[in-house]
Length: 491
View 1 (cartoon, helix red, strand yellow):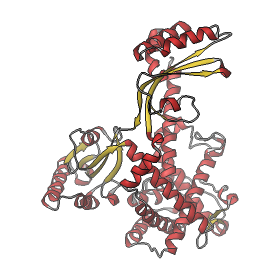
View 2: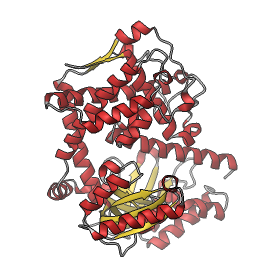
View 3: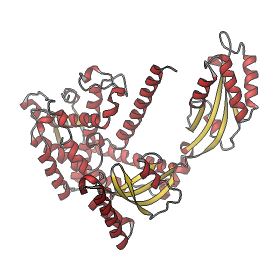
View 4: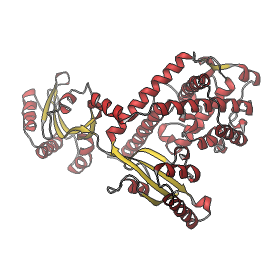
């Protein structure tokens, strides 16, 4: 494989991973497109524009009267002006560029050029301009519907959010988002946003899936939680094909159908070399696993072999012939690992971060971490008391969650943090201090469970949340004026 091919594949892999992460982000927390993280502290930086000094020269030229009196979206009791929509859209764009700064080139997004002339990496039928506008319209729809329900429920901004809004406004320069924008516009955006956040917190707290719910859902939808490993070999036949006719193809298929896994793989490799699919044995060995060994495969209704692969009586070593007359080929599949629920370990963990920047030296940060851990040990020494200390001391963005990270998978965190979490001897209540490039982390291990359990839990909660969101949207007549939203200038 040439250097150019490797570079293109690397770019495609990074682009695919960015697309997967962005799709998950939008599905679970559309509001995060604006604030980046759920943390209220992070909202100060992002919505307030404090971290976007590079955008100071991005001026948005709009008629002052028009931008403040044209309505871009509305609901029963709220209105979003074009000025507010400009602020929200600019925030969406800026935040995306910040989150994916190292991947923008691979994603085909050039911030120095007109976004309306650049196809979106996620959907080439639209431009990047369309993508950011559409994302913002979805987010504003969420804000209006949730803020309306908060109002109906008598929710009022807490003092915490009032203080946060003041802090954000003090740090905001409206002209960074548009020369016609004012602090009043920013305040109106923040008030709407915080009301929606408060309602969302209520909804999520009321829709936490119980263990009983999770197990019942898993039993009912078991097939969606199963994963299996397999290998395969495709046998084309007929004019121009390596196998001259169907009889020759079937002879090869019969040979594979009666092979062990080791024999199957050896035969497939020999045939691939003989057919000239790979130039040499070295290239074949380098690429065989990625092309012919499928791991953690999920059930699909239309692939022609999932019903067999995921059947209760299919076991490792079993084989299956799939005939594809329309393409004049046969495919032989061998089950390498029988289908089972994804048992990859997942953990919940709390931590309290102390940085050298705050405590002015590495030694001082470490000493403070040791001091806070001892305070916890000398007190109630519970998960709740640890969470309270995290809210008071941690420098991470999840202080409002008591330093809690849920659903952490192997390799997700930096190495030393990861190694502590996935130590096979780890048990609930374990504590310790871990050093990473970020600083010192006082750790508290909550629990470990299987990946399928997390999948079921997230699916239940996501479906419940979406149903609630749809109900709110319908109840309060949320509408977006496409002609206004689509003409917002933000970059």
